[in-house]
Length: 395
Image 1: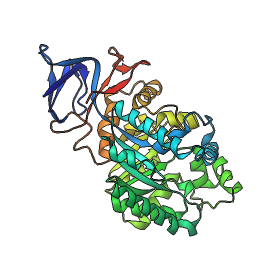
Image 2: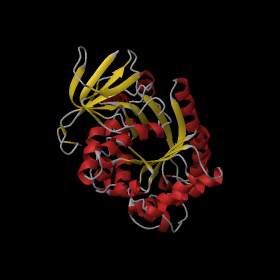
Image 3: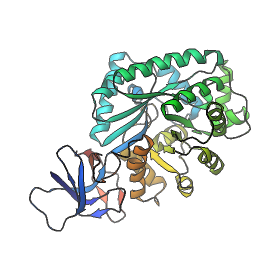
Image 4: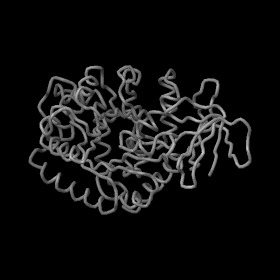
């Protein structure tokens, strides 16, 4: 048995414990938690807080070679132009090295589970080897309706490769503006069949303007490139997704559906989605949203509506660092009234639930194996992180 203690532990499913400890079996299984009454021999004590391993609920590890190459504050239209120009800008060996560096860093800094977007098989080998749990979303694009069957067939081949490697994977639609309605329906059907969808939702006002009203920079970008667009809906973009889902599957939906970004999602969009998506997680990627759009999702609004929130880092094409702790700091800066306990619940238990792994990850409940992470340099008066806070895996 190993007893690890710190100034505070955050079991997540219960209140923080001052001078708390977590007892673990040799294989990392949680035996129990409590408060130190007297330091006993063999207790490992750390200055900081102990938390369960994080779930990074949205990442594109394949884009790690793009670190430092993108301009900020370009909006979605400008970002798409950059990704089209730079995505293949590094040779395979360099891409592999960058991916492995970031993948290993995420694990060392406490990520126990990763929801990762893949457009190829380059990350499969490292996922197979890693102790980190990964669920891979094979993301598809295609604005031209006639291309949809071939796109899905290619994606099925990637899912089969993932299965051969022992990786949980499924096809997922990307977003309303990168897909014909036909492809969105077909990809959604594949994801629902597997029980998991990760979908970029209302990431920008440009998206809502394009899908709802055929206007704005993103719409003009597509028109100028001669690409097809879906018919204008007159409503926020999420309604287009919900309508397509119901074309292939009757509501309600019990499958795990992760809605990513939600930067311009308002009460009407959230309410409509929650009415039919019964196992929905609203994933925020704060630093990415600021990088591209200089704005963040309305987290207090999401909290007020009682939805399940999780946290992701997105990619190094839209972020300077893949770090859950840096995302927490960003949330603190913009919404200082949100308690640390709440943010950690999003990042630990809610993320695990989004991936169907909350039975083994996400909290220090007896019998789970979530890993143990130390976050240091805490302001214990405000119970918030500081600029100097970092995280590292202990178990």
